[in-house]
Length: 222
Image 1 (spheres, helix red, strand yellow):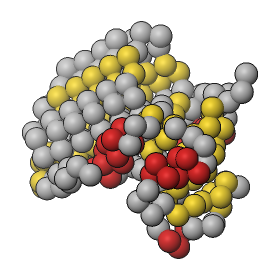
Image 2 (spheres, rainbow, N blue to C red):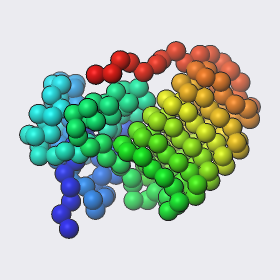
Image 3 (cartoon, one colour):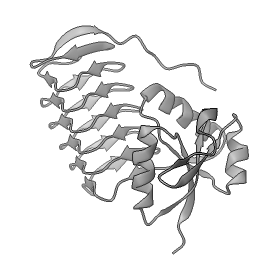
Image 4 (spheres, rainbow, N blue to C red):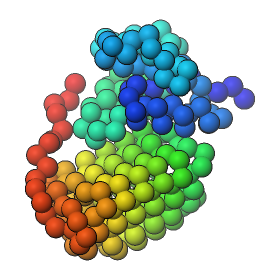
């Protein structure tokens, strides 16, 4: 069966792991990699040519004969903005799932989701749109990952955890059962979270304590 053509939006480090995952897929053929940085134009990422995106996403889709786009951006807010642009253009945001990821058949997954190498996602978990579950993360049973959040490499979510919109769970962090990581918050690398993380707060350490405020918020829709 012929593979569908997909555009990858983002030629940075995160783009590299997304391209790698797509190359291993039997579903997708990479049509092109798009990036707004003129310095990356005509370069290559894992052997695939990078093309300059000058704001005309639909024009690029027609040029490369693809209606499917994978967003390869780690930053939650930039990824969200691009996800909305794809939808507004009438294109399809696709899921990128590395073939080594172990995902229960009882997991619900939205659109534009990225699940990278070595992740484990257990039964009863819900993953909303535009979420990134990064390399070797462990998401146990009955977790709920809201729109545009990001679970970093080797992070562990035990049972019944809810990560709200735009929140980050840092590399190697552990969230103990039945807690909420509120929206816009940031759990630092290696943190051990024993209590709810308040909205917009940065928590670090073991046990995790509030160390600052995450002031970044979604930008205006385009």
